[in-house]
Length: 322
Image 1 (cartoon, rainbow, N blue to C red):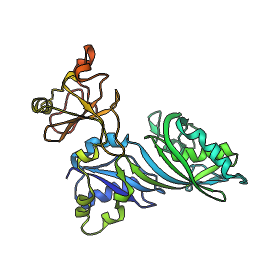
Image 2: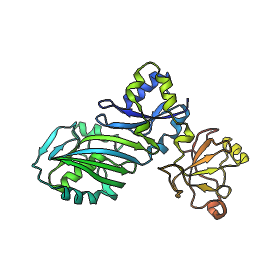
Image 3: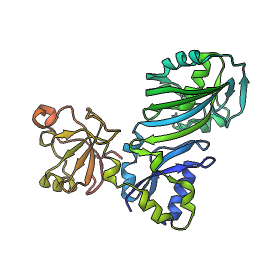
């Protein structure tokens, strides 16, 4: 069973808990996921089975969308509702002031992840260092917020809808919005609506993994590797090129023509971004790095063999990135 499955994660369970449920339901260890969700959060968690675990990082890198409720006037050590309250402040802001403050969080922004987060700092997860009492500030990161809308305001509670790049911390947006307004804030509710092509409306409730017939439900909701990666640009290989690739010989840039991904989340080809290499039968054989030029435009160094990021079907390459 090589599938990518969108689950609707319930609150108060970890992403690891969901993976363990899937392992028990399918009776296999070959289970992974494409990006965690905080325990208090709900919504889309993409879980991978069998050979589909090889494409985890290409789905993890997909854009994501969320609904979020931000509580102004309350500052916590985790930047969300689960942490210890560090400060409370009065809230006297208008909808217009909130709208104006949101402008600074759209587009390409720099944010500092929460101190309680899975970010690696000096070879160790940030949350472990923070829980030992170490005063370490996570390094800033650059992310892109494609869309950010105020959808409601009820007293100190602000409701948002956003679409963002992988690696964006909504908790950091909540915290920084509070600072911009002078009230402080923390994230009270978070629902992940999409991970790339996987949407909440098509997600299997995670509690159903504990019920009889869970395997059949997973098969019904799951997408094949080909369906899961369809949003990424692709290159169709000839039968000879596909056969050579399965034996460890990557094609040259001059031998391929690249097309845009398919669907609402479709990506345009960009140099350095992931690229599907597809057999004449429609199977994704490997993931490669999109070259600077390809096909008739490939000249000089661009005509060298493609950089293979991950072999999905066939022999692994000696220099394949894990």
